[in-house]
Length: 297
Image 1 (tube, rainbow, N blue to C red):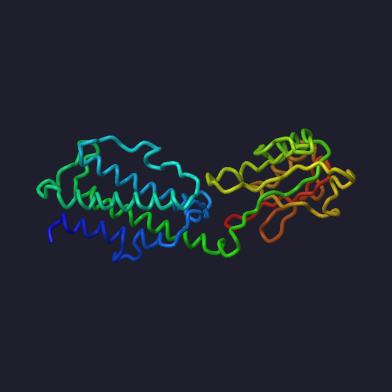
Image 2: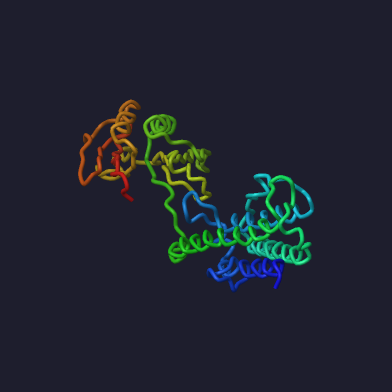
């Protein structure tokens, strides 16, 4: 078996099966649905679908270098946008990856063996051997990520993949509530529209909850003006805290709430390495601000 045949063998094994390291890419993708492939179960991580499109992009990069095209991938080519999660689109993505791998095998099998140690293009000056075998290394690297994403998906699928959405906060005035929460907690509006009854749907999220780069809905607050019994505003939990908010510095967080016009209900205390305080918004809704010890989960 010459070097070209060995590379072809590895291209087949890393994508389809029979690899020494463990499951190949397509073996890991067996049974993955479009909705699972579209999900982002690891905060800040890519989805399985994004990884499949990225693998395909890298095959296209090497194949065009074989033709003497030295252009690097654009951001859109390297990490293409994922379409809506339909099974037809998901099958199309998988079929495209299979076809590109087959094309790479065909190209390598017919490549001039005497030029394997020569660069495909001037820049970058990687040899044909390095770039061909690099496709297999790239597949294996992302196969490991796909395995982790599948593991992260499993427990969520068992309960219908629920995610925390909104805490309903009763308010008397939407604009006043929004101004306070922006200054005190650093929220930003993610949805603001009239309701069918002529009222208002106003949803906000904490900036930290919206900064992960995932497509999962961020947790936050839904401001709601009660249609009756306005006295419930500020006491909807019967005098108990409404929510717990984690802070990187509880003293700074308390000062921010007070500067916005909120109240300090219980001063900062410490226990088991954590520091916490109770504060109230402009209506009296009580929040617990907690600064966890370093390394705590």
